[in-house]
Image 1 (tube, one colour):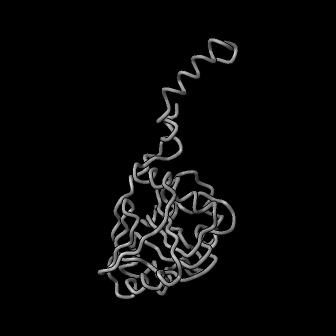
Image 2: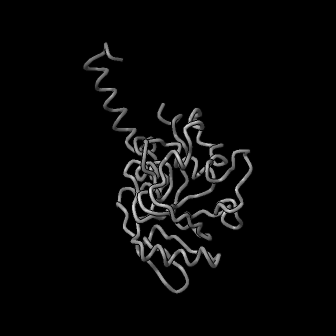
Length: 207
């Protein structure tokens, strides 16, 4: 049954928090979650290995200078990054690792297409902003002050300012309602059942 495959994706509307800032370009999926951690098909437990080679030294000790190892950024729900984030091989483990760490929104001047779409399928919001606006938001990282992401209004709110961002209406609907691909299919379960019944009548050998 389709119901057994649901991941219970959380609805996304308003997100508040102090952003973490990692101003590197071309962070690929192997940097986000290295290949040795791809053996699992579970969506949990990957957060501890997020950015593994940047977060830990050769002895497995945390590198204190890395942003996500510092307070309060180790609890940041929002990550600001450089251009072309999520490039490289296609691996759904990348958004899984970010989400398991607690990051629900990534802001970048540009994303790799497959990673960008995988974010939506897993309940994460990727926001594309021009570099100038990225630098404005980075000031709140430096000051350790919260910003707010309002998906309904398609705005980032910080201080007395608001930045609007674009998002595909269908992807927005899915995030607001917590719909993954299976949940979308279940919205048409009556039509699917009706089709299956008709097929059984016309072609009983299929059933």
